[in-house]
Image (cartoon, rainbow, N blue to C red):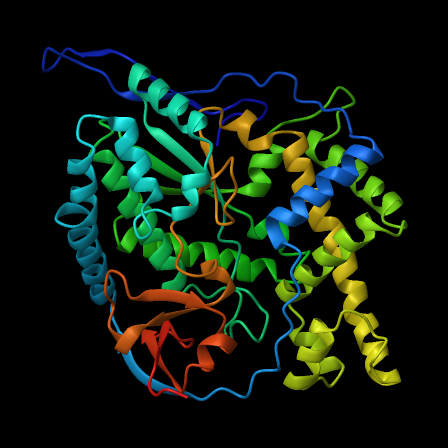
Length: 445
């Protein structure tokens, strides 16, 4: 990272190589000092609106109750090697970029770099159709600036925290990385090299991993977060895609803003003020209360309740009932007490989660620290570029590959309980892993 209190930007420079008597023009990184880092804490009215917008963007407002899943059937199938993953990457590059989809798109809008990049970003496989709603002026301005200044295009995407510990979504530990994560990294890599075919200075993805920040909120061990990130980096390097996909830690980025005039960490001081404001306004009833309850529902689905389920003697069916129930009103007395125990944990985490994310927005952390980057997202928004979609965010589910074959377009991501409704599952493992790397459906239910 850059020196604390400074941004990270890129600049095209001219250099002379006296040994070879040649001029060359590499990209170098510069570290301008951050200005106006301190922010005005929003009043309650503004904070209400910010919370509503944040929750709508992250969790929506729909309630879709489903019956509890039946116990799934999983049988061991086979093991694959790193060599198989490399073959998967090569297949994707050949079929989707060099002699496939990307080449056709590039030829169709030949000569117009901005139109070509737009077409690639909006493609349902290489990009995401949600990008048709992306603010075109932001992309056009960024691309024109990159072309004029001969810079690389960079898109920054928060994500890849740790493997979801909801037992209905995954059955592995929080430190496990499977094909779901790797398939998205491959798709990001593919989009990058496809855009490089039309944008001569290239494109980078900067992943801001948020596991260190979110682990306490979702009751995940920091050592598991560390293992998750180390495995991500290891597999990225094994596939040799580190030239297009880079990682940086969200906590490090947020605290990079430095200290305020009182010597306090800027991010922490604003976050504490926002958390206090949220606690103050959440006592009210009405729309803001309903918005917050939507957030709490989403948090429950992402929290690690595995130890709590054991302590409270919750079987799968009862745990499903407790995390999907809107209130304890229709529960037995004992189950109502259990519901309140889970809800209390979720409410506390929801305030912390909202305060953290709203502080990132208030301080414009990404825009200040990475001024040349466009914002990307796994949750499609009009002002952010949506990454390629494999179903759901890879850390929230497991990978399914049709017939157990790793093809360029047949990998999707689903919660384990939904995948199991397709039929009995076959588990495939990467080398000597204990947890499955991906699944296939062996029979139709």
